[in-house]
Amino acid sequence: MNILKTFLNKRWDNTNKTITMSDNVYRTFRLIDVNHSLYVSKQEFIDGIYKISGHDISCETCALIFDIIDKDSNERLTYQEFVRALHKEMNPIRFEKINQVFNTIDKNKSGSFTAADLDYSTHPDVINGKYTAATMATNYMKIFLGNYNNNNTIKITYKNFMNYYTDLSMSVPSDESFITIIDNAYKCKISFRKTMH
Image (cartoon, rainbow, N blue to C red; front, side, top):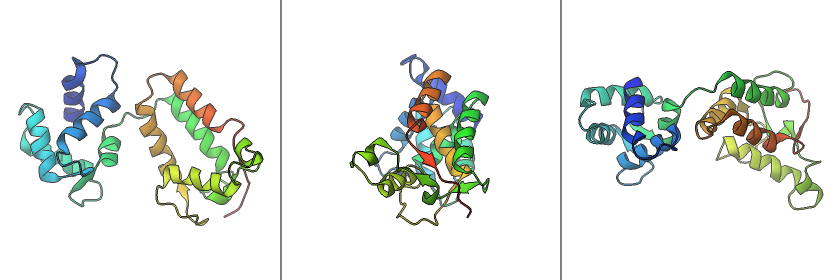
């Protein structure tokens, strides 16, 4: 994986000094996803990385990298899988912030939460009638589970939560900006019910 990360940084380093690792990952995936299907097969990945690396990364190494990234072993790689394989872990400052938010939601320390744990009754958009509390909770759950269907038994796990914010962290250059984003997302906008599952 370090071979691929080093290559991505080197490939895009001379084009724009302001781009992030997230930009590098997006540009690379877009290049190897030649038919814009939003996923790449193993052969497409091998051919693509081998070609854009200028043959610096061998086909054998490309195949090994693909097998590492393809966690579900279905021989197709989505952009999300690609991002998560190459993301940088959150530093302690960001990790602690996100950990605090999760623990605020997961009051009973079960390691997960459902829509029933979210209380939007005092949210300004609910008070002024723009949305219902249930709609707000559903929209929040869809951030983590795109196919969420208003089922209050469906859980957001600690892993789901941390993966989402680790991905987000990749695209935010400074700790200050990251903390501001999180504060704006949660401060005075949502309260959490203490429920037992």
